[in-house]
Structure formats: C-alpha cells, structure tokens
Length: 453
Image (tube, rainbow, N blue to C red; front, side, top):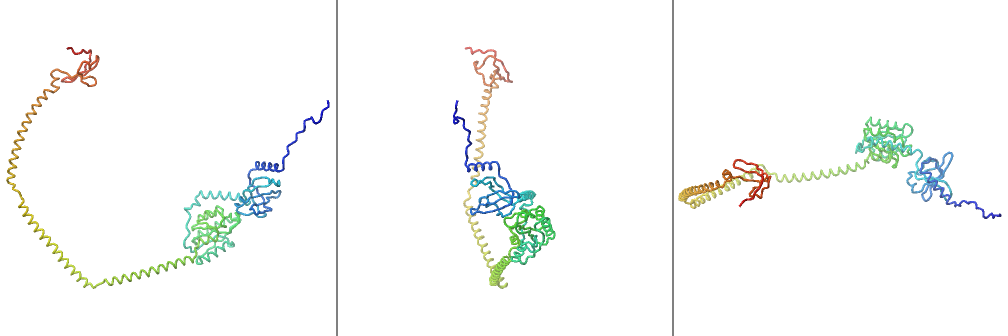
C-alpha cells in the first residue's frame, strides 16, 4: 500500500526566541546565581557621564569586565576613582541587554585594602572604647591661656608650616616646642608614641598638638595604631588631634581630649587670638576706670554731705543737754498728773462704795434662822423616807423568789433555759432543769399529763 510522505509524523521544531528575550533571560539567570560580591581590580577607561553615572572597566593581569555605578550610588563613594587606581567594588553580576554585554552593577566602591584596614580600625575602636579610653568624662579642658604649645609632627610636613603660621598670626607671644617624628611609613606609630611620651615626661608645654596633613587611609594609618592612642590617653597635658582633613577620622581623634578637623584648626583651638584678648582686656580696663571714677564721685559727694552735718562737740553737747532738760520736765509732768487723777478717782470710788454697802447684820440673822429651819425640815423628811423605805423592803422580801423556793417550790426550765409553765411545753424524755432553793437538778420527763380540772 502506497503511503503519502505527508502523512508521516513531522519532526518537533524548537520554539524561537528573540534576542531581547534571550538577553533578559540570561540577565535574570546571572542575577539569581551570582549574589552581591566584592570584586577587586584596577580602574581603566573611567568616564563620568553628564547624568552623574560612572562607567569604567575593572581589570587585572588576565581579564577585564565592564562596570557601571549609577549616580544614586556614586554620590556616596567618598572619592572619585582615577585611571590605574586599585579598588574593590561591591557589585551585582548582570547583563546589559541592548548590547548583550556582561557587566557589573556597582553599589559601593573603596580603595583596595581599605576593607581590611577599616575592619581593623573598627575592632581597635571597639576594644579601646570598652576599656574606657574614649570616655568623655576623662577628657580634659584646654587651658584658657596657653603659654607653651607642643607640636608632634614631621619637621618637613606642610601641616607644621600651617600651624606655625597660624600661631604666629593669632598668638605670637606663645612659646612653641616641636617634638619631631615621622608621621607615616614603617615604624612611624612607635616614633609618634615616643614623641608624645617625651612631651609628657618633660611637662614643658600646656597643651600638645598631634598633627599631620591629609592623605589616604594608608598614609594616616600610623594614627590608627593602638600604641599612639594609649600614648595620647596617658599624656599629662591636654592633647588636641588634628590629623588629615575634615572627613578623615582616626583612633587618635577618639583618644585625644579634643579633635580638630585640620592641623590649622588645632592651632586655632589651642591659641585664641591675642587681639581678641587684648580687646577684651581694654574693654575691662575701660569698665574699671569708669567704675573707679563713679566711685570717687560718690565718695566726694558723701564727704561733702558729712562735712555739712559735722558740728562742734561743745555745741552738740549743749544742744543735747537742753533736749535732756526738756525730757525731764515732760517726764515729771507726765508722772505727777496721772497720779493726782488716780488718787482723786480712788477717793470718789471709796465714797460711792460706802454708800452702796448693804446692811449685812439683819441679813446674817435671817440666814441663820433659815438654816436652822432647813435642817429641821430635812431631818423630818429623812425620817419619813426611811419609814417608807422599810415598808417597801418588807414587801420586797415577801416577793423574793428565793423565799418562795424555800417554801418547797421549784422553777422548771427546758434545755434552752426557757421557763416551763404548762404541760404542753414538755415531751416525754425531755431533760429539764429544776431550780431549787439550795441549787438545781436535771430531771428526765417520763410522761406528761395535762392538767386535771
């Protein structure tokens, strides 16, 4: 039987995808399988677009990869990379679909080696802080008038020239002592600590400046060493740290009594302008002069007033003698007149009293007679009351229950103490109490009979 070739099963044809879909799928696969990671390399072909985005190539000796850092991330980088810079980037592996280029989407960038240095910086900072080396309570205030300022820095450093220029301009009267030391390189930390210890042991300055100019984190690393921090903390005088620029922060800044953003600022903090102090002193001197003049004027006026009040002692005594005679006369008159008035009033009152006194003799006789009558009446009344009381006592004795009981009668009470007055109040086998003349008895009821008429 003939068969048509068209009736046979066709071969399955795979689906066709577009280049865009392919690139998007590859990008998703890369992003899923390669999480954020730090990648180190050298900057090449660096371009900063007008939009603020950074485009560059990251390479090493054997390979290279394109990278992009968008403006939102680049503005927090802290520095702008240059050709040949060794850097480390934290990036997401992705694919730029329009060109099909594999690239890194950079979220953070730092100079090569900074990660390890920064980790060591944080560990040392935490350690010294736990020991209380950075405690604000141990910080010392700078002297108001520093006569001698010590400087720990390199003699060749530009920072020294800035400090000396600032001190010469602001406080030319201040004595300056330099404790020279290298500020970077191998063994610089030990030499810086030794210079600080020398200044502390000599105790010849009022405040100590530990300074150097700006640089990379590697250049400033000597001031991140533990030995330098402990030397600053152990110094016998206040220490001002002026290391690097405003954005640079070192362990020495935390250990110092005061941090200055730059070496020049450290000099300004240590030595206030002499012109300002002189102006203040002149103002105070003017205030003192004005106050003294005012005081002298007041004293002169007071002296004039007192001189006008001052009189001759003999005149003053004569005047006071006259005043004394006047007081004596007034006192004599004031005492005699009331006394005469009092005597006259007393005589008048005695006369009136004698006229108003009653005849007490007759009243006393009547009172004696009334007292005798009252006593007689009370005795008679008492006798009658005693007779009545005796009669009532005899009647009460006849009604006394005890006398009734003595005649052979008894008081019957049930178990509740209630008086039994009729047979109906009793039941067989009840126990009653019989109160007799000489005690009581408990009696059991055998039977109860009603009253027989």
